[in-house]
Image 1 (cartoon, rainbow, N blue to C red):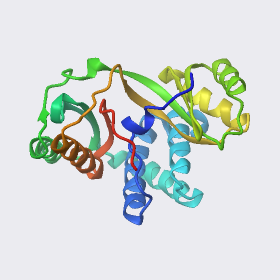
Image 2 (tube, one colour; image 1 turned 135 degrees about the vertical axis):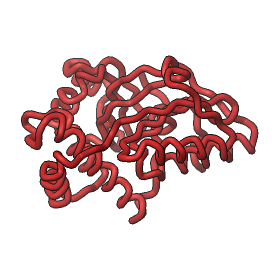
Image 3 (cartoon, one colour; image 1 turned 135 degrees about the horizontal axis):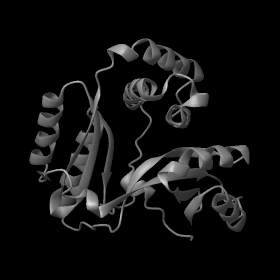
Image 4 (cartoon, rainbow, N blue to C red; image 1 turned 180 degrees about the vertical axis):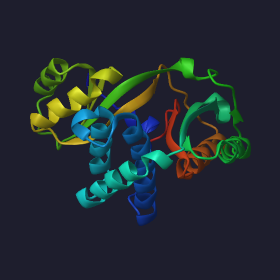
Length: 245
């Protein structure tokens, strides 16, 4: 179960600039409004909110800001008119892309998403055109400096509901069923592991490698523009993205 984790491919990491932090804060706040409307503002009774708080902390959102987000989301829950939308399509050279959005204006969002696909050599498709290539899973990432024993982590993860594990020199990726995510994250945290992230993900069955320089450039730009859009919460794809030098 050792090897190169694909998480860095399907979930791109960005330099934590102020602009990136602000976008993360905005997107988490929007998502918080939705999960609080669905399950209430008490994280003890709302597992999705607990997971979202953990996500905020993993993205270095201060506790005071998290508390303010929860209070604001709870107070505005009656005004919340955000709708969850999913778009599917293909990037350059047939890379499958799933875009998850929360929006208060479907026309604006649809227009923007279509524009990005058209501009950067892709095609926006119909629902179902690529989702069959992915499976929804829970993914927990543990950060470490090589000091953790692989067998011990594996035993702990399997005991808490993990299905698979990939061990690398600086991180450990544990995959589980979506419904087991909260218990797995909370159990690993209780055992003292440093959780870098824990969230549901669309995991591709196979990956596409791009060799053409223009396709590589356009695919990178497509993902960049999608992820920078305020209405976009997550972008999943099956591009085997090259490691940065």
